[in-house]
Length: 261
Image 1: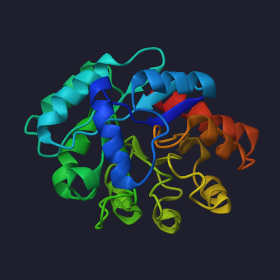
Image 2: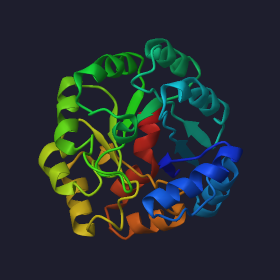
Image 3: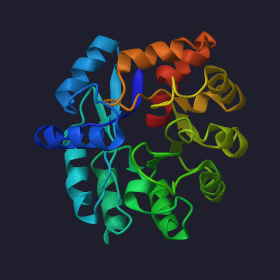
């Protein structure tokens, strides 16, 4: 089973507007139109069994609507995470609702949502999420198209990992897009998962292999960042690393199966 732990989709009408806008902002052309239908077509062509759809509440008022939609798209092929905006007043109630709706975790994007990942004001949200058994996935490192400062760099993430030992934390983009030297310095070997989204082909293959070797290989998750990357091509890039077959199988899906239960 292949699991793509990091994809993005939008409601059909919103996708027509959101995907072109995001492409223009980042300078990255979309490979799909951002709909669930297009994702499932891509999954079928790529041999992917399940994809984890990650949505972000960029405004407090979006929080409930995004989480409700996320719960509605879940099926045998799609697993969805919810999101919490830090300024949403009823975050505790909403985290419980996320759990009750069967969502496996939440996606947080510190750059879009305007907080530093190690800001203590976020700690009650993390604590409640982990108490509920939810996974917390962070965008990590640089975000193409957004200016500095970057709010979730490896040194800051390392503080959260230490302060929430045992929490299910995932750092997207191999722990921190374009800050992979700092990933090796601060995060490799700690109790955190990395996903490979929008990293393979950007990170040097030897450094990618070194990070995997020096980290717990059971804490590496295959992800693509579709629609910004092609799912089939990303599988090929992972295979080009020539990893041990058991390690490769773990990254492609077995590790995700364990984490997602």
